[in-house]
Length: 458
Image (cartoon, rainbow, N blue to C red):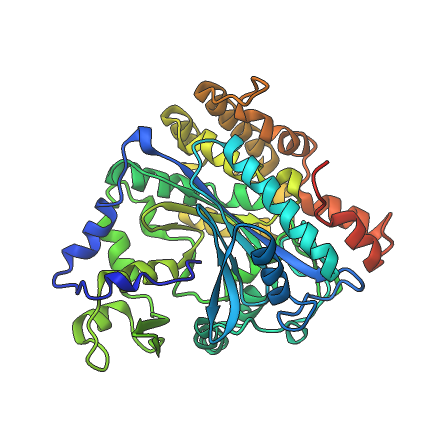
């Protein structure tokens, strides 16, 4: 989620509701200016025993950030005197509540560009992590540590969010401290384009969840899910999570998303460095009545939109949120799949053809089923693995048509090859982890760490 608030915009008060809708309209971009932005979260553990790496201490995540800032081109960002993030010229490194390390990558015109950045990032964090005894695992969830064993990152926003999560669901703090994802941000050219992408993205949620399911281990044992991370979101906060039914209406527009966002409870506002707990107020209430003399601003609206967690969300970009974090060799398959589908009109329509005939009830049933069954789930008597193969073929055609080549003359479809191989075999990453855990790894944590750790590229 967005970590920092553009306080230079704080004085721009909202005078009419239309300004909220105009926020989305002002974010449109012509096709030639479209970019793709990827956010990569990674779980960090102590290499010695697989427990979650602490935030504090000489061998913790804060020390890792300090090492990255000392050695590479990162500027530290402090909160209450603690280093909680890093900022670079085109990207940032931030922390999720349990110390999960997130690279918010630069806005790239190709997956080749994203690969260069991602490889450099992994080399940096593994180099410093090795010195501190920290390993980064290619999993969508902390595999060993229980919730109480994971230290909270000391950020003020988390002090507001954590108790709210405990009030509105049973799994919200697990989401905050244990899970990791990879998210893709996409541009849109118009209201119609944005809503089509939102609709298709929401329709593809079960497929994306199933293809990238990678969180079968938690609290030191198999959890009977392939994407436990995905399941956790179903009982985190019903007001701000899950699927959005209105996006499937052909007439849905920016106004509909605005109406949805207005009624979701807020988390906070920040004024002159002071944080105000706003969890008892919807944005609609704040807009109408203010809070302790403070009026709603466009900056507040922009931040509020980043605190909504539907499976696909609308901000100044469209954000796809359904994939578990991956092993490095599959991480770039997520943005590659998205670019092939969403940045080619024919491919976007072809992807919609795969899922447009499902009823709302079928979508919800499948959404829950894939968390356990992944590609083995079925809808209308069709195996999801079959639809996933078609979706990869669509994305591959899109990337080949875009013909963005690397130095070796290869187009971006090369980043889908491993994913395509897995889907052809009807398996997801979690299936491989489960087989290894009960097989070669013999449920031994050192083998898990050795077999799933990120490494410096050869």
